[in-house]
Image (cartoon, rainbow, N blue to C red; front, side):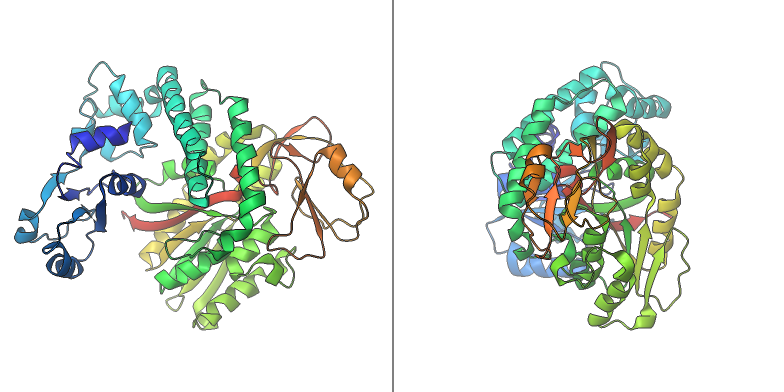
Length: 488
């Protein structure tokens, strides 16, 4: 779709050495990686003049290989290097000529594929800024556009489902969340339930068969499993702030990011710890440990202590480490490691009476208050590398009743998980409620873990609620964001 259009428009694949000047950060890393793979380009980001000069003199000049170089800031590019490449400016004016480029530059573009579809279906030019802004928030989400987009995304997902690996599931999770976003934004698109069951069924199969191997993957490019997040952050940042958005799903982030105009970021995903409950997954995030290594894996009482301990073990002094709950934080010049816990989204999940649509509207209202943007600005302008992470997501479910007489259950806010200590034979209950007898991957083995199916939860039978604790794709795969720039 957009990728093929972009490749043709910019002559990619024709030239062996290409420099793209993308000062507005229009083309995301995912597209660039696909282009690099398709045409066997070595992808290089030009962010240091001396470093690139070295690469050019020692490698590129002598090589017959293919190179794609990306400039996202107005750094000096020497004339001899420029003459050795095919150079092209990436601009909204050229990509979408029927729209006002100034409005595009100053708007948050949800998805380039949807924008491309809507632009192709547009018969008239929209030269004014107001017309283009209206197009981006309303007309782009007309039925004909979103139905074409849905067909395209479903085709992509079905292709990705053919190869069952952890990185493909990252791509599927993002595409599926974008479909959900368009569904609630447009109000005129439905996602076929059979397709949803296909995705969730195959993801469940992946979790039961492959989740136990995720801890073996390197966190060099980004944390695959959430307990490696701090290792990644500390390795890449000397002074950092980690904002933990409790319960934030990918869909929530898509909504929130609409209000982060002027903030650029690198987007990636990671796997939460299962069961996807706060005490297990957030403690693993802040301690760098797996639940089986935690003293109290089902209690949050020690999370501040564990964050401080993790930072101290990596060479920081205790007075340089700060743990804070809520948006209001006082920054001191000595602070080098900051953790900020924000509970707003998880609170909305557990008080939500209107299902996913209600959650969409509530998160939209929450993000419009500007508190997160203000917090990011404050931390970034005080010299911190800012990261945003989530400990787990959430999903809309139907309640199936409450099991009784099952031994001693540990108290959690989850409606999808039973963690049993003194348990007898659970086979009858598993059969009655169609539960998943979950193997204790990374978990204390002296407990039994019973999980609801992806679209079910415990509670008075027949209600629709939002919850977490299970192994649906929305609960397990969550955002991990690095803020790269702030316009102040």
